[in-house]
Image (cartoon, rainbow over all chains, first blue to last red; front, side, top):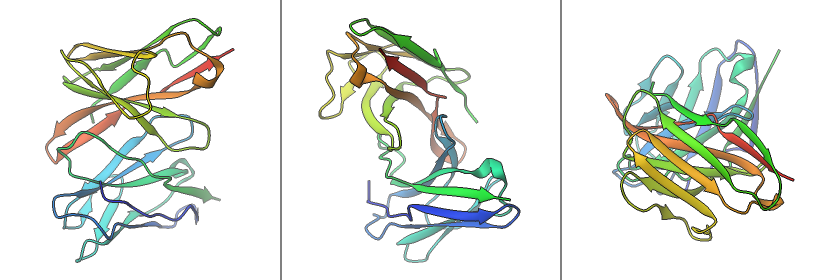
Length: 110
Length: 117
């Protein structure tokens, strides 16, 4: 898996959009960008993944730059329940392992 | 999404005893499951890959004789921590691969917190 770099922590006001960046400058052509989050003392939760195109689902949007060297996860209207550690992972999808970095600790505040 | 369960959710045991943790895929079959360990304020570390009907593949530095993995069916993998010691106290998380309409996803169990006294 290509190495990813994320800010250690971010704050976001409730109701505002949370934009979480991820750098993956060495990503290879067959690696997807996956996002997971982990709420305290729970297992990670899958959020979204994409290859080239921007993706959107009921949880979030994923914006991938044209050169695929970075991406941004967008939570459009953050709530207190979105407080968690968010992990960005570059992964082929067919390979077995997911390698977790240190992630971004998002704190949503009133 | 697909559901993965773990049992127990927490366990406290005495040093020297063995503890078994179960990981089940509830609504899908999983030929491959994974076991992770997470120490406080650290990220998840992959311990081993569990393959149905064959031996598990362990990551470097993980003692296979201490962390016994059995994947006897397509919906169940077990991790047994043998002769547990306080340094084995950790949050153990399993996951399973699932091929959804959008491609490969990996779903995680809720985790098992092990405390060894």
